[in-house]
Image (tube, rainbow, N blue to C red; front, side, top):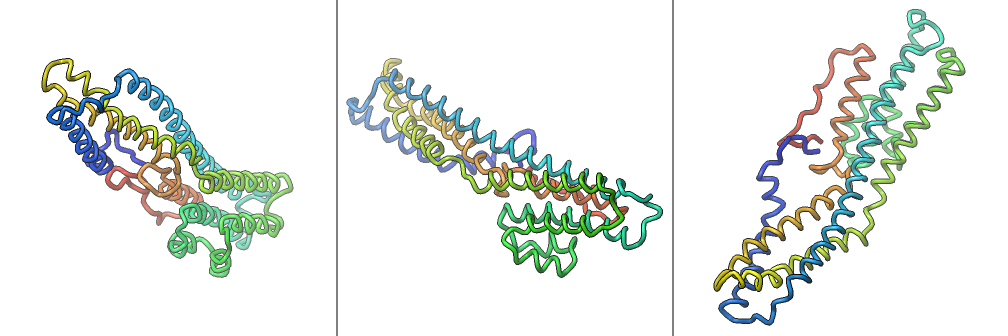
Length: 311
């Protein structure tokens, strides 16, 4: 997720230079055809182009709104994951049936395993969503028993299996939680299952292609017709003014294509790209909070933006 207040001009240039080159060559070619070669029969009425531009702007606005809703939903889901993780650790560590000072070493160890599996779960879900199984040993395995880690890595859906292990661990934690406390923790696991399912729905359900593809087609159709509609209008200002078509059409075309691009790069917000939900940073925040609850002091540093981007 890009977190700086202003987007650096290099980022804009990287996304725009190819389109600007296409606009320049196309608009300049039409200006040459209109002026020196006198092929004015290519001109189209400006009113028709302006009507098309209004229609395209409404359509692109609808697509961008839908794309942002997908990003916002993904961010809300991960906000819920952060809150549930903290709640889970607090309930496991403080809401026990015996007083904490009277817990046996085995019960304390069981508490710590429950909390560390939660850290493993958020990292496993991040890797599962981003399709990064190669990072398992670095990001997930340190929080699990070796046997559990080896078993989970071989499963099709490691985070779902981790929640199953948590449920089984709650069942086996005899004398640690009373029935009401146990039920509350199970409800938390059920809610985490729902949060995972919401993230997987966004990941596995692409933005409807009919909307995404049509938006691109309509924008580039408008870009193609724009110089044909404004050449005659600039010619009315005086002979030679048709050359103004080149910078004017480039500017308007760039605005429309950029607006469409903004919606395009927001369609899939959990792909580990510049404008996606910063799942790595959120997982690190959860890890720091939960390990502090366990009393650990040797903690990793919070994730920092890299070139203005927080991953």
